[in-house]
Length: 443
Image 1 (cartoon, one colour):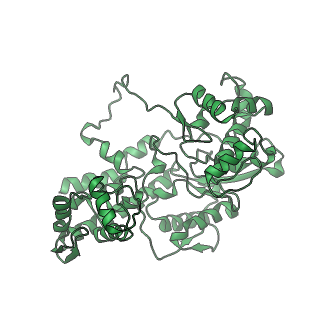
Image 2 (cartoon, rainbow, N blue to C red):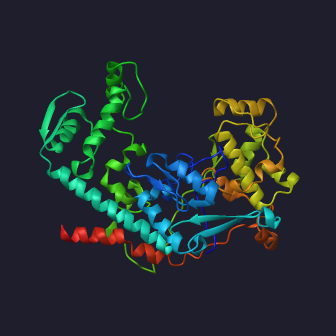
Image 3 (cartoon, one colour):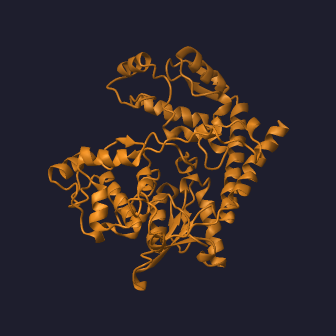
């Protein structure tokens, strides 16, 4: 199969980023969807050898797969049952070679043959992988709905209120309604919540640690914490904290979608109409983030001008001086992003205690435009974006016009676009949607 895009960053030895980073306040994409896996006791197995790792240490296995077997699994956090997923593909790889299933990314494609390497990408562009992920998601959804029904019917619930210590027995709804009515603290309708006792344990632990449930700041004593939450109207949870995602049924409904995306959809308006008028459609502006600070700009000229004026970094000059091709620019940007994320000077490779100290050193020592040897950053792992939603990468081009020398540029591209013409049909025939329709019709 041909290669396709991969959002999971590549790793190199100890210098590894095992989950994709993401800039804040950017348009969401599927790779930022909440993980809803529950911890399990059975280990994860390697697809190619006898290596096995406990689920909480899945990053160790991901690193092993990449470093030892040159394989990357796309969107790992969206896989409902990673253990079963790995067992399935381990069996399939025993039957057929990995190249029958995985996209292939050839590194250093224009260099000497002995320096070329093939990396393999396992993702849901492959119909078999897509179906497997949906079946695992369906199974997880059925388990969650069953657990939710048990909690609805459970009359043995017993718990104290977190705010007034009043005792509640019977059904969980009595406590949740009490907290919403008497203390203006609502975590949602009881019927929308699953694993309720564990959810309340999590909230209680935070309060016992003197942590505000909304802004998550820590205070010196309970009285100060209570006054803060009352005066600031912080008697609610932080919706951006994905630690809570697994307690809401909505997060299990659609593969690869966040609760915000599911909630914003109106199924009554869904129709397969080829004549829809899209003339009034407005796209979200693309915000490129500066390499050195949190400043965002919506145009190429603005972000380049900001980096030059505020930080003395001229990417245009470096591109011209070093005669950088498109993918060399990609690798340079990803290299700088990764070093700064890890509080390291990208010029002298000195590591600091925090990002602010590293940036201060880069400026005061005059290292802003001083790059290391090209061999330090012109490496295969920097093909992979450090931040999955890095719009700055979309502004890069081979030439000032952005369109010239197409023939030469094609020779530089190490991946071939995957044919995804059947993805729409796959999504329309989602087993999850069918399951929900069946449940809706029977209720």
